[in-house]
Image 1 (spheres, rainbow, N blue to C red):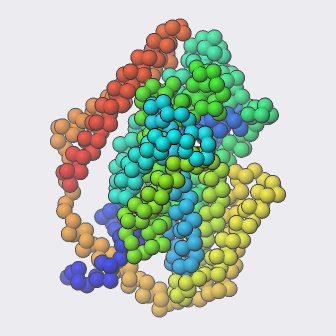
Image 2 (cartoon, one colour):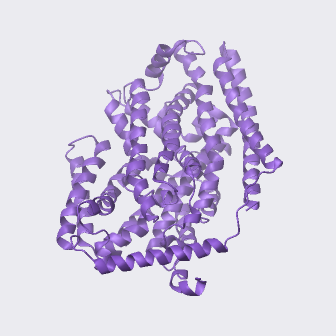
Image 3 (cartoon, one colour):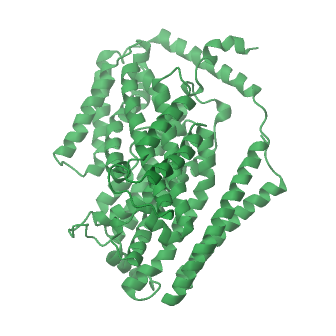
Length: 570
């Protein structure tokens, strides 16, 4: 029988450096909640306005976003999830096995910066709601111009860092609570402000049919003209935008960090909650909310910040949605940044590295430029990491099929893998070169870049040792995996048995939480369909603002209470 003494070498390693243990795997509901919460985010208000500014048409939005987001789900399911479940490692740890320490540290530094800035931008977006509530001037410069805004950013940031340092379970729990409410509020906001648009364009509170709705969209939201009055993007560009929006996490394999906890490879399909409910419904809803708020305020949609849009769509609940939506995305990205930092400073725990990165992120969040530049950052960050995802895909999925040896660089004990570093560099030159010469739509550059990098890496690796057998090293690797599994089984046996919470109070809390969401939706439906005149619409909208906020408070109290009761039973 094995004891802790037999695994002294493994005891010294941080948990994040080992494959995820079997007893710590999660079912699909965890990932459904996680992705729904992360991708129904404060940025959806920004992206909703972006499609308006880019001049998309209504039918292109409705059809293009559907196709593009389905392609994104397939990318997670068939590219990211299989590698994550096979290895049970984050990309940051796995990359070290195939590319050496030098490239891994360089790549991890890039990810620390990327995800810290993304997280900082989300903290800044959340702070716009608090700014609006306290009548603090909008921050339009690249630096903060109000000391109270800085205090608000730091307060919002403390919550993000506090949750992220507790790891995947804390991130998943927080997302699971927020996801249902976020979806209900985005949907409700669109229903509440659609009549305002209809009154302005059609001179009635509700479009009479599908053609009316399309005409409303073409005239007041997605007009087909960009912000300069020129013809805008079409269906192909909308599809590419939706597919490419998360290349950093699926083609770039960053979400190995999350999906390594999945029991099955098919759980990549759980990302559909984020894509269909988040990017599809929320982007469309955000466009409707932004256009409606613009009509009420008499401003252009691109001149509004998330706090403005959310308030006129949802009242005080709007402040909550901007804060919570910003938190859910910021927390997940800060968790990723902490993982990348821990892979660099291997002698420090992930909690410590996440805390340090989080403090730096809070400082960055005080500078509003990170929010205003978030879309270019996401686009270029995706192209930056796609070649690395291609290298990992080639090593893991292609090499065994063509007779090459997986992990050959590790078996040769190389601290610097020339094929990996060179392929990454050449892939970047290729991708950004295509962009510079305007060869094709920027949104699709990740596809040829990914394929090109796979080919380059395969050719170079074949010349540097990937064709060799390494029989002895493979045998040692297999024995080490067995030792890790036994170590994790011992750890699992030492953990207390989890008990399922079936108490009446917990069931009651869950029912109350669900009812509060149902009431919110019912109130929104009443605003949309129960307002025959402009006066009745305004009255119903004010009623929604009041009672939706009460339902929001009730939901979070009961949902969080139920979550804590479930934990106490374990």
